[in-house]
Image 1 (cartoon, one colour):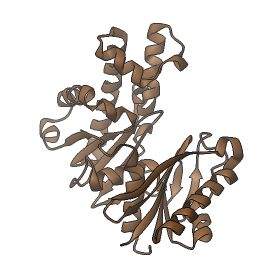
Image 2: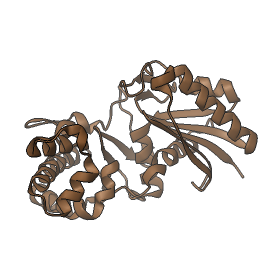
Image 3: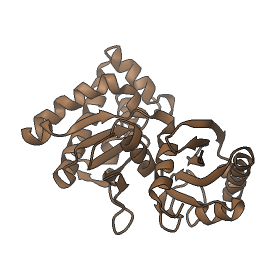
Image 4: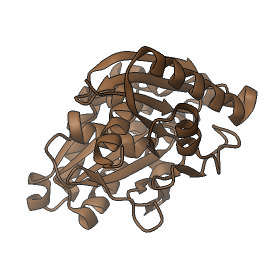
Length: 296
């Protein structure tokens, strides 16, 4: 049975596991990302140790990496990364891991991987084209057609967070951090004293400030979905990120807003759902990248 080593690299944690070609995990765990304390060398050392340990335990035939940052998937290089992983820009995880373990490796952006995972085994199953939009600290996105990512000429396709809107970009208006900021301003609280989970807890108990802030966020999200639909006309949208845990609360409200702004024919033929794969989405998308790559 072919097995694959998978990583999902974030600013604070590294998820890792071993899966078969159907997405069934035989190993699945998480370690802290030491990049902020020990630099990129420290992070690469952790990746190397984990990969070699998995190779010693299992018959690994390929490695897939889902990672934060703008990625040149062809070269397996980080073109740009924020300070969440200091010094990551210019790093080449693909060549490093291939040299360390002698196993072919593919590297892809984490939002792209999450979208691929959802398109393959999650909420977007069977839909093409598919747009995945993730809401968290920022807003990201990707476009998938016939099971494969559309990267664009500058590896920028699907970056819906940059869509210009009245009052700012989609990211500035619809991210979880924007929601928390609105609530903290409305309540006169320190923004660091609350989080998205708390906002939704208060909203479900009828808190007016939280309900209004969520409504503003959904107004922006609905506009972003409609703007993207005008260009891509996907069969489905999948809304991911931490906010997907609030599916029952958000989905009917979002659909109501979309029905008011989208052309009826487009609304009726566009599926909008929330992500289903949770913390495994990135690794499953990395696995899909391996399977899509004939050289691995």
